[in-house]
Image 1 (tube, helix red, strand yellow):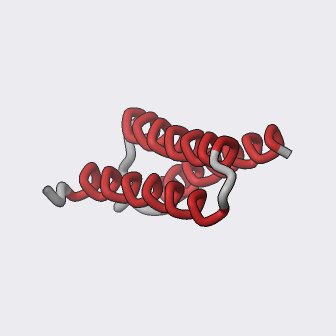
Image 2 (tube, rainbow, N blue to C red):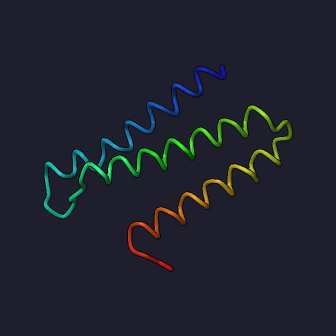
Image 3 (cartoon, one colour):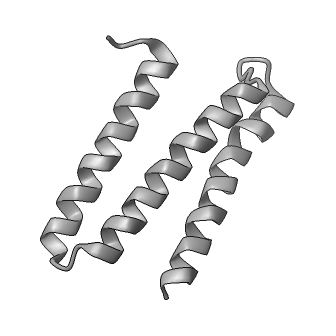
Length: 87
């Protein structure tokens, strides 16, 4: 199950990165460069692997939810900062 979950994480990252790639084919409003894809891939991979690590090491469900929620919140903050510069 552990390796299967990791495979799902990697597939999800690919699918998420495929969305802006497809959008770039249909509109000029989405204009990502290779570095944009690389940075978002690194962010998604880091978030996914961190949550996987938490799920493997933390035993209590409540603690898992809290820690993964914190990781997801940090991901969203970094993403928003890179997208529009909140801070």
